[in-house]
Length: 386
Ligand SMILES: Cc1cc2nc3c(=O)[nH]c(=O)nc-3n(C[C@H](O)[C@H](O)[C@H](O)COP(=O)(O)OP(=O)(O)OC[C@H]3O[C@@H](n4cnc5c(N)ncnc54)[C@H](O)[C@@H]3O)c2cc1C
Image 1 (cartoon, protein in one colour):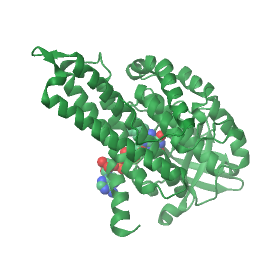
Image 2: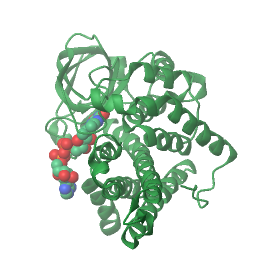
Image 3: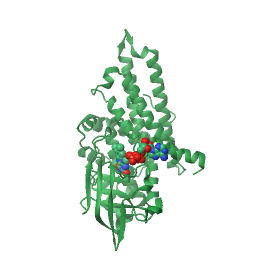
């Protein structure tokens, strides 16, 4: 599909886009089906992404990252997700969640200890906010961090953690205050794999973004040094929300990538497939379907790039991030479903990636705040001025 001229990329961004698409086609696409079917974590691919700088797009250059803006991360995320959502998750958690949290809020020691390894892929990072009893209601987490001398003792568990089963390092959130303190009683920490009392619990099989080692993580009297606190006590909820606000734009970009891949394949198929003696693309219903798919994909892309541009110019972006996240993820589900319809029986067969697109897109509708949560954020801002 032709690029949208409305999104005027700088030369640096345009070069990055071309480079990311080449990388995705060469290194990611050939592995996409295997990652999905086997549900096995692609360690070698992650390492390769590290060699090429993709795991540290937003990490400052002094720690080995590319030091790019969010638009750069969005461009790469979109291109990688066109090939494999799983690969874009692996990259996004490393760069946009664990890497961003430490880049923005970590101490100098934490940055120099962890960021270079995260960027290269020598350290696999994860981000643990969600708990069995608190997903959308993130301020309701109950994992406890109790200060004892110069340590914190952690008890509780995290669920649905991407890369959780393989992570060397977890940036996580726990309650240093009481339940009554709500969001103000939450703090951010890091914990390393192998710390006594910290273990992988259940491994979770999910319908999409497969091969990303989604797991439960358990803390049982896990003692970590006080210097593992990220930022200050009580900053945790703010840190979680700032990081999630940014990464929602990344999730929207991944959704755009899936929608574009589904649309491209549908346009191609509609021209090639002959039905009743003429190409499918001559059927009015199919033409309109493709027109709708292109329009919604374009709208999602414009919202996504607009939100990233606002962020990069230092303007308020949370509202637009919420709009982009839910619109793009719902669009990706819808476009993937239409693509399956256009392909008929081939669309539902596993010989084509279209059913994977639909399963993957649905994951984006849930992670980093469901579509309902995004609408809730927006409605509060629109109606209550919050
Ligand atoms: C594949 C995958 C990977 C993930 N990776 C991570 C990760 O790396 N780190 C991490 O911390 N978390 C991760 N998550 C967790 C994810 O962020 C949560 O699943 C998500 O935020 C929803 O929380 P929940 O599952 O507890 O659902 P709930 O919060 O229980 O929501 C249930 C339903 O209620 C709706 N709902 C909630 N609030 C409202 C409201 N105010 N108004 C109307 N409806 C509402 C929701 O939209 C949903 O439909 C991952 C999840 C998945 C599936």
